[in-house]
Length: 161
Image 1 (tube, helix red, strand yellow):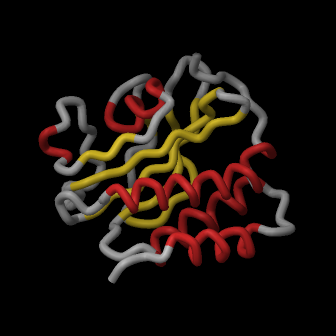
Image 2: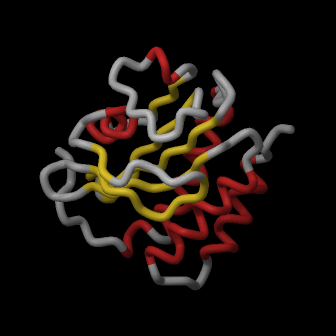
């Protein structure tokens, strides 16, 4: 089953419309992505802290790593690069941090405000090579919608430069 990202974006915008609490929007966004995208076993946020460490935010799926060291793993690499990373087989990513051994592929989209990273949105799948080019552009589209509605509500404390 293939996701219609145009429809999903409209639904995300409607889901988040009118809510000004950042955490509430992040929680609903993570749950929405987790339940609406097929073959996903985790979807959620990590937020940048002073010193560059990423700390777990709202998510859906199995319990996850609470803290990711600065620049480490797929999430840290995406935050430093300020670009989306798609990993078809996490076992081949040298610095992969295995929070859930069932995850086989991963996509991480950095969260940007005024060109500064304030976190990442991470989606895992138990299938290898789950995230095709259309998923990358679609998930980036969903994250942009989240950021337009909710991202500006979170103050920047320590952006990655």
